[in-house]
Length: 236
Image (cartoon, rainbow, N blue to C red; front, side):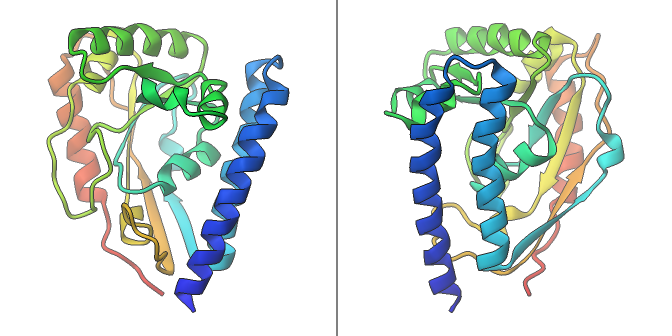
């Protein structure tokens, strides 16, 4: 039955992807808040259908730690789930993505309207320069920049070295960093078709000050919060 429910969810996600990506072309001339709100409906629908069809719910701990001003998010990256759900907690968001994603017909065009920080991986210092320039620009536009320091999706119990790029952006920009931990990978694993019923827990940490601090120091403090707050699975 759970496999069948997972199949229904996947079909709904594919259909909603087509509708939103094609429909977004009609919003290209609208201001960013309007475009963002329309595309955010994609996340709203799929998080809702995941709950209804697959029994995956979530809770947020630490909402009181969200700063009043703008900031950078460092989040653990385990699943597609957090790329959707964090949009419901922190709109609007600018994701740091591979520039190549913008070239995908329709999907890439819709993604571009969310003003992502698109960088060309494998270009070394040039990619870092792009991250800093575009990241600071988005922050000044009052758009939260979200970075996955692991660089790719990893299982909840897997430890990889954090990429320094996010720390450098925080150091150069002076904006605080909000660390976020979650355990979504247990319920919607990387490359996993079967969605497992249960409760995903998100922990939002206190904002980390960055002014006058080095990138590695900022990154280490974020990691010191994130890793211990990835809770064990709570299947139902």
